Image 1 (cartoon, rainbow, N blue to C red):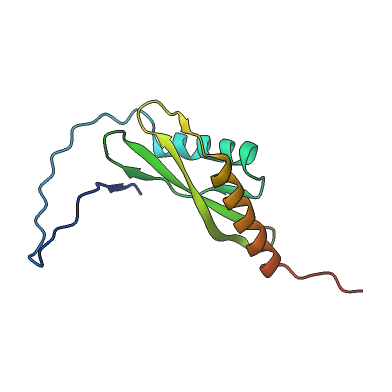
Image 2 (image 1 turned 90 degrees about the vertical axis):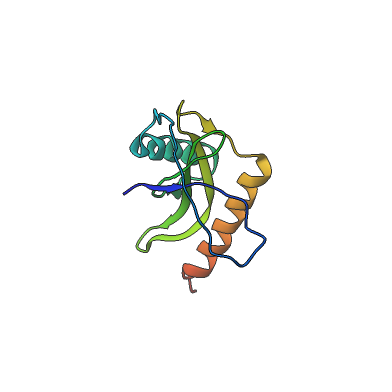
Length: 122
């Protein structure tokens, strides 16, 4: 399944929203390739236990696949979304995260893993 999101500015009135869209863009990178690239990036740059979820196509000036970064714990499976990675939908380039974004993902993953895994008893 492919989800496509097209951003719009919020209306300032309470009237019903009418949307008419005609989008003509060639997406050169499939969702499968985007997920693979995100998986590789997350494993190399963030953590081995964080993998890619299902990509969402986001159409804007620069179309991107937004891929959720999911924390996977042995025996529990995917337990939480700890962030997002973007893949350029035309070139396949990973849009690199800042050091701060990476640290925040790692800290969130660590906090969740600590709460969900049992501690050893003496």
